[in-house]
Length: 422
Image (cartoon, rainbow, N blue to C red; front, side):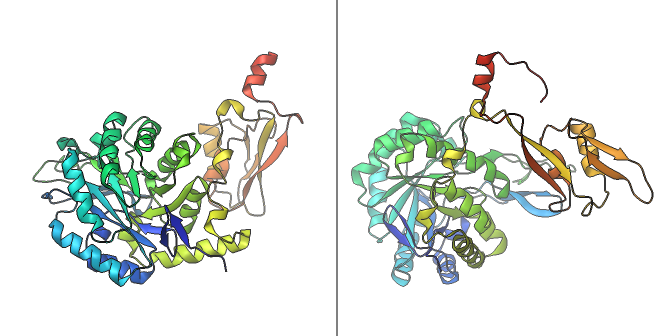
């Protein structure tokens, strides 16, 4: 079988699945249970000055019968005493020396505070540090968290302070609450960070109680913007990861991928787009620590099927496949095809195409059911009908070429070719 052994900045772990800095990594009892279940590593919940959390703290977005499509929290960094956290970190390392132990940090905004906290954490035997430049709530009012990550110059200064003292690998966690993660990523790399992780949570309002008119989660009739995560943020995380992987500066350091990783397939996608490993939070909170068993088995089976011996064999293989729109081949077309043997005659494809797309599906009324066929000359290959069809492989998109040669939009303009819908 393939090997899932992973090395991130020479931090070894038996697999690339780490638990992210969050409630599941807040104390020894959780972390030991996670290691016993098979997690390759953890990022201990962020340590810093003593804080006091509020109640309640969490809310969620459900969709189409699925609970917690998106998860929101207004929880701060660890509210447990620092000395207890440090003692428990050392104990977890002693009991599971083969697992990765990275500690998330958010010190006060001065060099001395960072230096003092780093020294205390390194004394535990931790394998790495993760700088929390992403928390979007609570800590930002103190000029910390996302307030640092949103300003590349400030981020560069703080990373510089850290690198003066740190003797173990440093990973900087970036905030997604920016136009682009690349400027902050470049600044952190320039200041010396050896790795990056992303994304942290996205500022959000998940919903409003229509009886009280108070958004969730609420505290004594009030609420605040929270941090959004879970499966709903995965597409955004993959986009931001790709921009880091494609940039000439940030692509030189390894990246830990975060944001909606719930299955082995999600993890593979993050790693194909450049992540060396992945971090998981919401899925573990929803399903429990043993989900890592399915993640490991699924990734191993996929690697075996594809012929990959190690995880390094496929990291980054999809990065070059994301290009610019103007470089796409205009002479390449798709045309939908409906398999009449699989069609259940629900009409969803027709409704979607007729009202929301290009009126490319013909409806033939009949008894006992209607028949739907594609008007090939009208089909633009948008995929909408396939996406709406509830039957797997009933609608397929067949490749067609209007001309054999590659032609992109820039060539199209240069040659002065006529514009039309196809």
